[in-house]
Image (cartoon, rainbow, N blue to C red; front, side, top):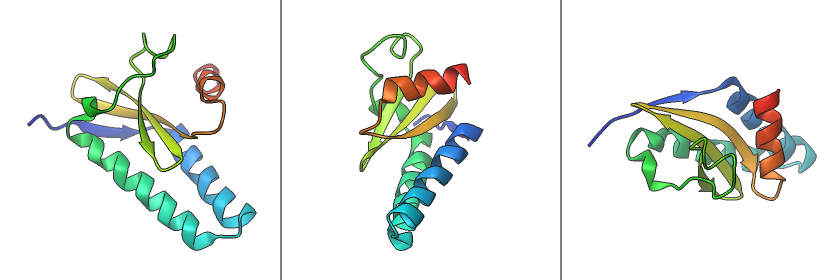
Amino acid sequence: MKHYTVRITDQVVEDMEELYTYIAVQLRAPENAMRQYDRIAEAILTLDRFPERFGCFHTEPEYSMGIRRMVVDNFLVCYVIESDVVTVTNVLYGASDVRQRLKNHREG
């Protein structure tokens, strides 16, 4: 089985910090925040094996760009596969305007 290197972008670090802060501070649930953070982080690490198991977005331009999404609870982990490297680009809340957030991150 092919083994991939998983690369985390600065945007993912920022997204994870934001989700932790929101749950811990705004929702006043620091234990839940840590558990959610850990679940997402652990799921990201599984992308080193068979990252193709999760599909691409069905909308453009995300589909043409090969942006894939893995659902972890209420969050989407967005990533691309290039050769033997999986680059995780975003972690987004599933109820948010995902297409707009992806666009903002590409332009920003």
